[in-house]
Length: 151
Image 1 (cartoon, one colour):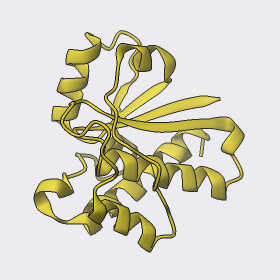
Image 2 (tube, helix red, strand yellow):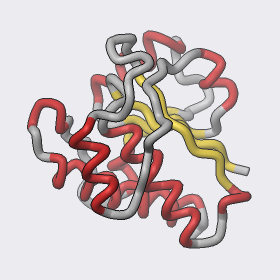
Image 3 (spheres, helix red, strand yellow):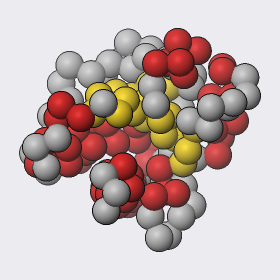
Image 4 (tube, helix red, strand yellow):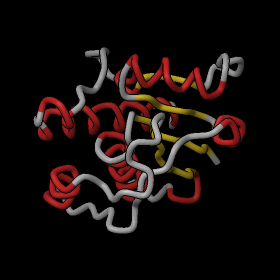
């Protein structure tokens, strides 16, 4: 089983979108037993809050529901437990390293590493562009799934 933790700043926009997009990809390929997928924040700002309404609406547009998801902060125990910690941008990477120290097991990766375009997933909290963030997340998750399945 491959255990994946998606991480962004607050765990209310990008990382929960990635969590539920990836769960959907895995479900559509009948590979639920092969993956454990979750998401977390690097900050404490949104702890316990639900997914931000525009992100929730964007997921719902695609038939994905995240009603019970609430924000939580990543921990060192997450680093030990998960096989991959997939981050949305360089600030998330820097902040995750503050929590875990160095990435001795090479588990930290940017989601967009798994696409041909590279770069980062822009934060729709600031840009208000939930379409762009969602589309980048879908590309990243599809690329990650293909990578993990040797495609």
